[in-house]
Image 1 (cartoon, rainbow, N blue to C red):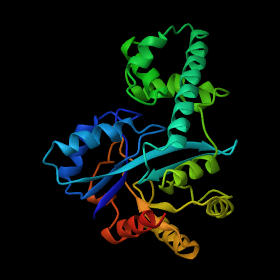
Image 2: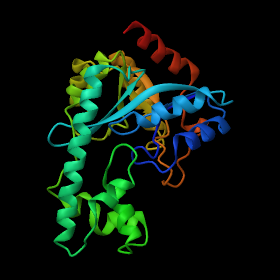
Image 3: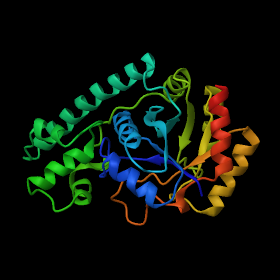
Image 4: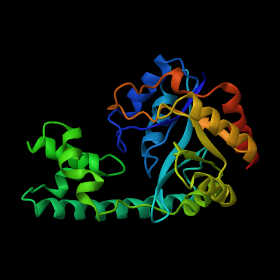
Length: 275
């Protein structure tokens, strides 16, 4: 296989640096990758600078993953081949980062009611790009409240615990339009095909201007991939995919088994060039 178009670094909720990601992709003999950190592209920019000075035989596709919601369900929209200098998408990134800081403060206030006192400055010190609950988990670990990041979520940070404190999300249409205005390709990441409103949503996203769907993912097996591939063909959507690598999930690696083929990548590239 050829390209992994869904990878995270420590600029969002991954644990590896851009340089380490490039090394892993190179060792996996991939030809193209996209670093798609949540609501920021700082990791991708750093990786691009490193790549220019390295011997890695890789091409880096400019990418981002936007955290979205319709008020009920959450959706993730990936942007590929985007222009990082586009004024509108830069403003959207800035707006989301401000909202992320506000959300973190609310969670820390919630934890304080449980006699868990964490420093906001310490929490944000773990973040290089987009701040989120994993950074609170690291401070809980550092202060001895938990013995692992997973335990932090199980005891304190899962949606069941923080309930009414919602992490910032933008609308799906807002994300798709921003990606389009930055000359990018929008992809619905790891959709839940078993959701009762899946077909309604994919048709709505198609009307919004979605370009493709993440068909290849370690989150689901071959039968679901075949179903998604059939739907993409029916709706004339490109097929994308990748590992969704973060570094802490056992069994999920940057590898050819979690990548898309050259022909699939070429279809995405062709669409990007025509946009």
